Image 1 (cartoon, rainbow, N blue to C red):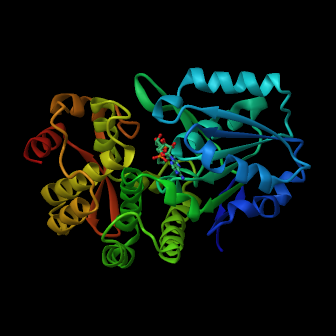
Image 2 (cartoon, helix red, strand yellow):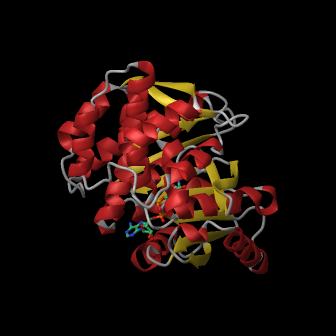
Length: 357
Ligand SMILES: NC(=O)c1ccc[n+]([C@@H]2O[C@H](COP(=O)([O-])OP(=O)(O)OC[C@H]3O[C@@H](n4cnc5c(N)ncnc54)[C@H](O)[C@@H]3O)[C@@H](O)[C@H]2O)c1
C-alpha cells in the first residue's frame, strides 16, 4: 500500500492507495472511528450492490452504521437530494461526533462531502473513491452540488479526514468510465511535466488498466501532483486554478450537451485539446497536439466538439465560468507541458478557435 499525506493550512490527512484495502477500512480508519458515535455511508445504487457490504463488514460490529443509497449519476448532485440526506441524518439522530463516509465516484464524494460540511456546521467525512475519475475529486476538499444554472455552483472547501482508495474496485467500472477518469490523469500529466506525461503515454495504450501495480504508481503520482497544488493554494486564489486545465470548455460542453449524455472526463478530454490549440494560437506554444489527439482517440476519448453543441452557447457558458471575471474569460493555457499559465482570453480568440477546432 502507498500513502500520500495532504497538508493544508487547515488540516493534514492521509490518502491510502492500494489493492484490496477496503476490507482493511476498520484498521486504517481506526483513529477516526474511535472518536465517532455513528457512521453514515452514502453511496449510489450501482456501487452499493458491489461494495457496501465489504465496507460495512470492514468497519466491524461495534460501529453503528447507517446507509443512504442515491440513484447513480450527476442528477443526484442536486439540492433536493442533498436536503433529503440531511433529513435522514436528522431523523436517525446523527450528531456532531458522527462521520460521513462517501463510497462511490465523484458524484458521491461531492454530494456526501457537502452534506458533511454543512450538517451541524460540519462533521468529519471520509472519502472511499470507487471510480478512476475520483482520484481527482476525492482529494483537495472541493465539495458541492449543481444548480440548474450551473455545475458545482453551490459548495464548500471542506477537506476529508482520510481518503481510502482501493484500486481493485476500479475493475468493475465500464470502459467508458475508465476513459472518463483517465482524462483527468492526463490533465495531471500536463500540469506536472514531461516526465509523467511521457511515462503515461508509454505505459497506457488501452483501457482498462489491468496491472494493479501500474495503477497504484499512476494514481500515487497524479494524487501527489494534486496534493502539491492544493497544499500551496487550498482555496483556489492562485495556482489551484491550474487544476481547471481543460475544464472551461469541458464544463461548457457538459452544460450545453446535457449532463449525463457526455461524461465529465470525455468533456475534459475535448477541453484539453482545445487548450492545446489556444495555447498554440495565442502563446505560440509548441505542444504535441496531433500526438495527443491520436492517443485520446486510441483510448476511446472524443477529440472534437459534439455536433449537438452550439458554439455560441458554448461561448456564453465559458463567459459564466467560475474563473471568469466581469464577463472576461480567464483560462488556464499551457506554455509547454508542465508549465500551465492563467490568461485572460479574448472573446474573439475563443470564437476563432471554436470555429476552427
Ligand atoms: N470535487 C472535485 O474536486 C471534483 C473534481 C473532478 C470531478 N468532480 C466531479 O466528479 C463527478 C464525476 O465523477 P465520476 O466520473 O466518478 O462520476 P460518478 O460518481 O457518477 O461515477 C460514474 C459512474 O460509475 C459508477 N461507478 C462508480 N464506481 C464504480 C465501480 N467501482 N464499479 C462500477 N461502477 C462504478 C457510478 O455508479 C456511476 O454510474 C462530477 O460531478 C464532477 O463534477 C469533482
